[in-house]
Amino acid sequence: MKNKRTELQVSAISNGTVIDHISSENTFRVFQILNLDQAKNQVYVGTNLDSKKLGKKGIIKISGRFFKPDEINKIALAAPQATLIEIRDYVISKKEKIVLPKTVEKVVKCYNPKCVTNHQQIPTRFNIVKDHHGVTKLACHYCEKTMVQEDIIFV
Amino acid sequence: MSQLKNRSLVSITDYSKDDILKVLEIAADFEKDPRQPILQGHVIASLFFEPSTRTRLSFESAVQYLGGSIVGFASADSSSVQKGESLKDTILTVSNYSDLIVMRNPLDGSARYASEVSPVPIINAGDGANQHPTQCLLDLYSIQKTQGTLENIHIAMVGDLKYGRTVHSLVQAMSLFNATFHLVSPESLKLPSAVKRWISEAGLEYHQYTDLSEVIPNVDIIYMTRIQRERFPDPLEYEAVKNAYVLENKMLENSKDNMRVLHPLPRVNEISTDVDDNPKAYYFQQAQNGVYVRQALIAAILGLKQ
Image (cartoon, rainbow over the protein chains, first blue to last red):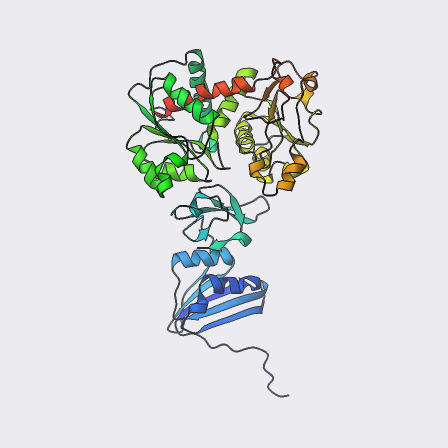
């Protein structure tokens, strides 16, 4: 067969955001926490794509949308190694590796059912810490319990 | 200005080693003379959203020995919480009527939150399963008093080391004083690894045991704890370990002369009543020390003692 295509072609977006280098298993988590199922514009999702850096990676392209710091913090928690690329008029206007903040506020729900934040109207606050194995954990500012990323429920 | 003035106490880790030693020094002064009328004209709010015997009564007696007045409630049933009032509104309201608020609340983290919204200092008298720093301070006072020092103590902690909040706080505090920890518990109730890391990060040693009799001859303090039914998610897990350790008088025969038995109380059956008459039993004096330590805290936070 002639001209066999080896790559899936996805059209470039004119304005919007590309979230690249998502670990494959977290691709749909990122999609979900950003409520992209509600999006009205074009959204492309790719997962298990070959990546020199990660082996396999996920990528999400969202047309006509730019994310606020709170949303970027959510992406950072779900996909800490991701790259955020903003495109304006087909040109990359910003490209940065997402960095985990030291604290996150109003983004995550505490997993401890007895935490005061689950009973009173209090904005949640977590310190992002690494344990002695280097695993990222979230320590609740109020109840002092720590949770791993798998326990995260976004507000 | 005093180092503790106007500072809330939510967690024992809010206090440095110097802060702790300052409170214990003031407590020793109150032990010599507990009836000093320094709180005359002051109002202390005592907000107990859940029942307590020792903590509430010792706070209230601490205030009354010092000539202060108390307002508050002993259960959420007798407060506006019943009407659905938020914690923030309760704290802001009560802060209008008092110089300092002592609070116990069943929700983890409630004391930290209260300290952030309150214009007057908060003393945490227990926030759920999280922190109980005044218990920790009275434990430290009792250790210092019976041993003459807090430094280089060999302490055995016995029973529920997994869920027991007093154990976790005491480990954190004693890690400031070069302690060696002897941790005695059933396999299922071992000290959580995050708490053990406090010990390692302080460069100190801990040893884990399941047999209590093994450690008794080697330690300065035996800190017994109740295995608390209410902390267990699974009742079968509780049944399997509820009588794991019972300290009996004859077991103390080979203990060191300076050894003392502590317990945060209430006990159920983990210390046999035949230990009560042994001069090495110190748990009732320990509860009494709670009054002096709470007097010291209130006086220091209000800037009345330095």
